[in-house]
Image (cartoon, rainbow, N blue to C red; front, side, top):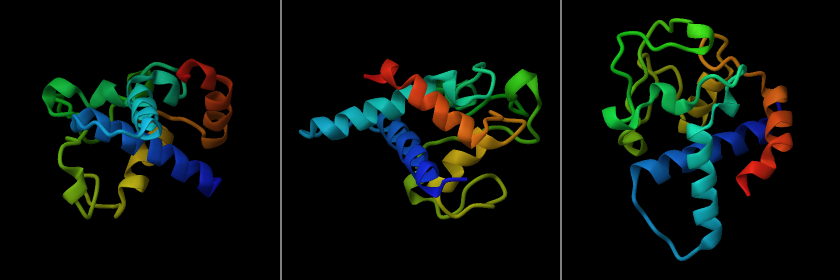
Length: 138
């Protein structure tokens, strides 16, 4: 996998989380555009293999960006063996996922996108899809 693509996508999703979780305005129009892009990607099913779910499908804003179901569902209704954790206060975490298997938020953001039972996306196909559909975010 292209590490640069991975880091850029992770950064965009993190910025989106920040926009959703923190009502914060800066003078920088560039930062505001990045935050808005991340927010759009968080709610857009383009990240999933079959365009059926977005990050917000499991991380529901009305439930502290968590899932109330015992087990979250991924693409094609696949049952995930855990529910989606809340995305609140992630800045202060040093381990992510219920079992603490990753140490960085950048890694945590990308894993559900490529996990075959969650969003099931192939990283190369996602890159092409984002390039092709990039105009919808202008």
